[in-house]
Amino acid sequence: MREFSGKFGSINGEGTHAGELAVFLRFRGCNLNCGFCDTKWANAADAPATEESAEELVEYVRQTGVQNVTLTGGEPLLQLTGSLVKKLHDEGRFVQIETNGTLPAPEEWHIDWITCSPKTDRIMLERIDELKVLYVNSSQDMSRYAALTPRVRCLQPCDTGYADRNRQLLREATDYCLSHPEWRLSLQTHKIINIK
Image 1: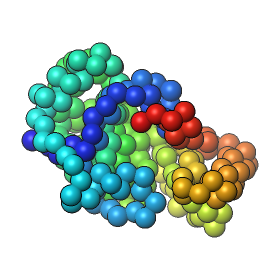
Image 2: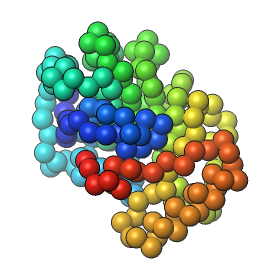
Image 3: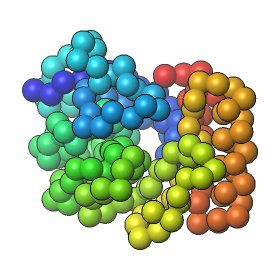
């Protein structure tokens, strides 16, 4: 049994897969405590959660008819198992995970797409398909990601909850991408169009 703070179908709002329909399975709990986390509510000890088996989750995904499954959190690798990934693959689903990268994602699980949104310098992943870095200020050391070899690099302005500050971060992140073409600008489009 795994603890979940939510499962829902929506449009993927961030990164390379923005705009694609997806089923989100939001695992409860995280091994970090980031001040800027936009899902901190899901990690609190008293947060509402359900316990669900792999079979129940696969049945939920099957009923949606959606092909893309995004495993997120909190930190999904605290609870994810290879057997759940296999069961989703057996149903013909594309399995994407968004992780902070501090725990390994075994290659034998055959996760289709690994998005690493690092919050520390400790990256334990053997493979990163998409590196999604939160842009928090102009003094941020982007060189710390130079040794990583993702297929795609995305820079996403942090949502501070303050419109003026958000506009400033968006301008700065845009300028950074314009002068560093290996980076793509990622926006939280689900917030822009006001969906979950």
